[in-house]
Length: 172
Image (cartoon, rainbow, N blue to C red; front, side):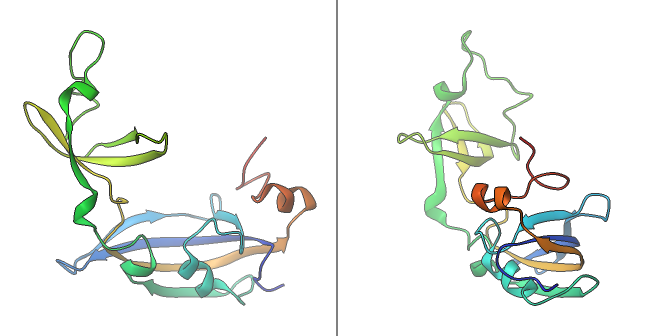
């Protein structure tokens, strides 16, 4: 069976990245056969370029491809940096939880329209916290090396829900 739309696909992979600035490749994440990435192909849940590189492959096929930042999580956008007033982060006693709020920490935030997003703390100042609202992998070229470990037909329920159920997928 080949990888195509509406198939459940499981892959193992190692992902590394390099930033345009320093071109040094660094390890980001890895899956294995006990814990593969399992997803419903063609449903828009993954980077489109990732799926494009897997289309037509079969169980046992290996892959090794790069996705540039523009086709992955985008380039870093300087307009997605903001200084947020310190008062937003203080607890009911007016204190900042320094175990949670520290440079490099990724914090869930909500905008004025109720949309949730992730922001990385860049710097903590007396009056504000400097936040980066770019995706943490924005500006990184991605390198995937892996293998296809399973391809199967999606169930009617999986297709109706738009995601995989059971091992490696969503559990209700």
